[in-house]
Length: 231
Image: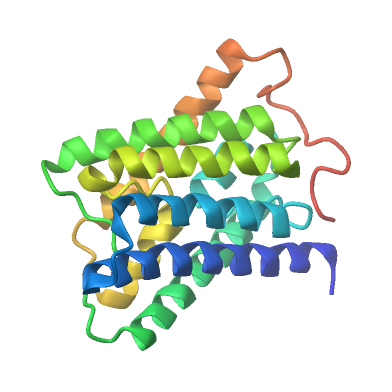
């Protein structure tokens, strides 16, 4: 198997683990399992940390279409590979939601992200949260790869922090794939557009912020450096 195909498999596995662990925690909590909002937030942060450690050196552990697009906008990821990465992430997310559905057939939402208040409030919150997350990712990553324990702690910690803050309002998705999986498997697609558009815009905002605040070359449009991506 070529390095690029291994990278796609790694993205699918990593996104599967992220969506499965996070949404299963939500479902278990809703069923009276006592996970709590804090517990769910920690699950999301910890699984992101674990997956960065597990597949960061294989695929970069994007695990998120918004992150992949953000790396492309930052000049760190080739456009030709975006579709394959996003397809792998979405496939992993949908497989995870199907597994949650098979394990907990009585739950109808499968941990889907849905706004609890005004739709535009959720949209703007998702944009801001994703911008914050993407800014951290760009700051601690090397090229298009999120490597090392420092990156895992910073990114996983940011995910947990933002889930604590935004979970009760928008679901704190920051990740189109994380929202697509439960929405598609449960058939609840009415507010999915929030979680498809806001994170992408947020990632673009983060790239602009990176260019304005980080040293030259952090997010300059340039061909990815040798070694940043699997061949």
